[in-house]
Length: 201
Image (cartoon, rainbow, N blue to C red; front, side, top):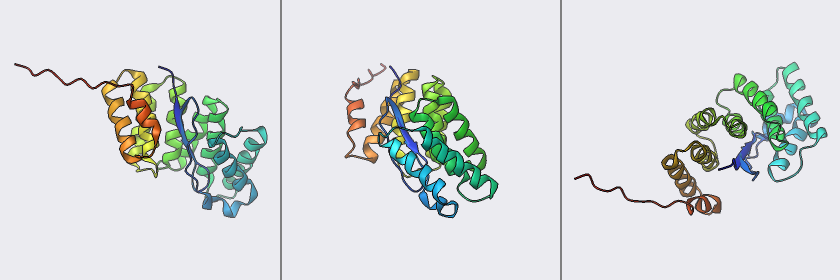
């Protein structure tokens, strides 16, 4: 089974999901960028737009890099979020090593930034490092992200690809329970057949 991840971008204040052939990315809240002006806002908006299917352009990456430099130099809030947003852009561009690097740098600053952990997990899935991806998704769920159903879906895909069909089924089911109006978990569950265990006599 191929990676069909959903990723969570870390753009300022927006929790969005993009349907790339792999997972959902998440971006951080926009309020972090007000003090740093246009670069941070442009970066956050670019990450949010890319989560909704827009291309991630070189100009978008430049906005995020400028936001990262501004927040780092001024020791301002929003540094980890800007890194996470740039990581989203790298995910959309299939630049998985860069997405992993930005997410890891963001997590060094804020270990509780669930969006960075989810996005790194997605990039790791694309690199077929499923054990590490599952670990990132599990840790993100402990932080209680705003859209846990996205994380459960991503972890389900990683578990399924690693051969853990029971774990995948349970995660798909949980994703569907958390957001009953979302069709994606139902579509994934429709591929499973639950066979009752034979009693041991």
